Length: 463
Image (tube, rainbow, N blue to C red; front, side):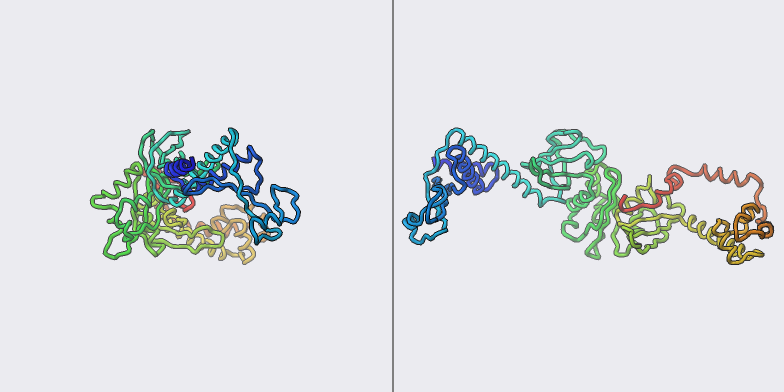
């Protein structure tokens, strides 16, 4: 019987992939628990199984005292010295006992304890195996689908691919073999839970490492990735050797390498750009395929979570830089970790012209008769920063400004005279400007910046 016990434990250890020592300890604990069910063994009892012969031995630990009050816990000094001549008061001796015989209830308790310990050991083994695989790609077989969450079998474990981590439009059926990125491994009451993802940017980076030998060898390095799963992605790569083109290595001959990755991601379009130490150059490249005129990196102010960049592009490149629904700008912002503000050359020129006109208006206003520093400040506070604004405001409004007071009529007359003297000569027939405006509106398409909306021009890495 003892030899059979060893054979059963070793066989169970092999089947479950558990260390046999864990099972021996489980059986010892179970036997002790079962003996308490039938014989009310004290807490100072211990059961040991010989690892080679399978012999079961029981021991009881007792304290050496001068006078025994509890025979289960204490032993007299004279009796202790008979067992161990070196025994002294307050020492503890471990004495051999007859192994308990288990009844039906005790045997049931033993079974329950062993099963529980085996389950715990299996769960701990699975957790230990997969905790080191976070951030890696695993292959699994679709086992079942629960409320659009896909449950995969990965070896002896099950993993979950939540709906939010699935590429939009993908459909899975039981038996399908798929690859996924290990997002998180954590302990739960029901055992280790392995969460997977196919939308994480790290999945794209790992696919590049898997499919491109130069990345496996460390010749090409993936510096950053940004994705909108199922639609488009951007990957920044750099080469550790001058004679190796990082973009060409990733694309492969006639695009074979990048096509394999794109098919794995359900046709996701992937832009590969060369990484740069210079932030301005990196931002300009990140906005490809749009051509950029200039990039200005702004200093990060206190309270800002990320640095920002002002990008100026030619007028005909604005829509391309922003992308459909702002997608190109968003991906570039995620890739660079910056807040990117995109403006066209025409807009910058218009803003500059408007600023010059406002400055000229302020200077002209200061030159009107009767306008001193106090009046000038009061007019500016009222939103009147040019002679044209003063003339349009009218005498009644000027009288409400305390600093102007009785000078309202003279000031309004002087402003009106300045406006008349500086009025532009009419060089277009009436209605001509309206026709031009209608023509301009008709020329706009769904891809123009006007269709994108003002918010699309500014993209943040946190979006």
